[in-house]
Image (cartoon, rainbow, N blue to C red):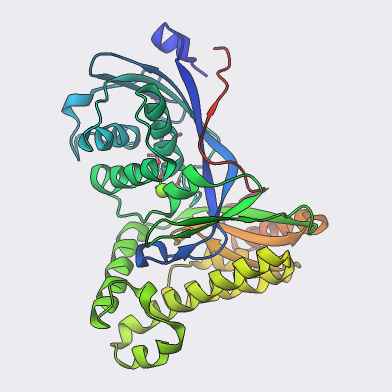
Length: 381
Ligand code: ADP
Ligand code: MG
């Protein structure tokens, strides 16, 4: 791969890394002000960066498809002005500048082990690595949560994706060995120990390698539907609807909004149950919660698809304690909680089911809860 030095004829000032994530439970709840429970993946996006004193922003990614860097100017960045992958890092610089931070140009070299477009949040990993680099290079002193909000604003406003706050908070704030209980309403967080090894368990991730075209439009429609339902119920967000009031609330809503509300409210309860189990160390009990969460996304929220349904079904049939799709949906990845000794069997069973269905074979790996964004040692080259 082309090195920083070859591209820019200088050494980087430093190296920053930010991870992808999987969400254990709490799907499509962040934009309803609810709770989510992600872990960071061991897969990271690594940014080597050198501060420049002028306005030139040079961006290179090993996954960008070009040998030469994309060259932009910080003072000319505007939403819609940068097409393609370079929009993500440029968006972060734009958002920092917009927020009044005195940022200048930089030379960036990006490399990543986070699969892109697989529901594992490569976009947030990229944004957060760039945000962490800029924070240190310019001594901005922003907290991880402030950087996550900046990255979300960058993706919402500059790239034009109406994502919630989970991905960026997970990438910035997760800790090794822990799941992050995040309250999306006020961004309060709790690190919940998640010791898979002690329980003899593994978390299997299967990237189905499909992303159906309807994903983007559907996300915006679902989000709008949730907001419409909250407004109809006189609530600022669906998070404020207590489970005990669900039946009465459903009676007041049109048919098309009921399943959305049922998913969000029952999903909140599943997050609470999952946290209680993690805290008592009863990780086996997490399995059925994952599977129930998947059924809710499939039957009520409508964000699963044949490939994720098949992966969940095959994993559970092969002995997984539970499984669900993770991320926005319409493809992407599935997580399965498995006994460590059964991990390979379950992965193979998912692969066989895909082969029988004529689908592209999924990519599978096991993942331990890993650290959030951090400065990393700079290696030669
Ligand atoms: P996800 O976040 O689930 O991986 P998204 O569609 O939100 O999927 O983001 C994927 C996009 O992010 C890619 O199409 C690409 O534009 C950009 N991206 C992510 N990681 C990289 C990278 N390492 N290099 C270049 N672009 C990247
Ligand atoms: Mg993304």
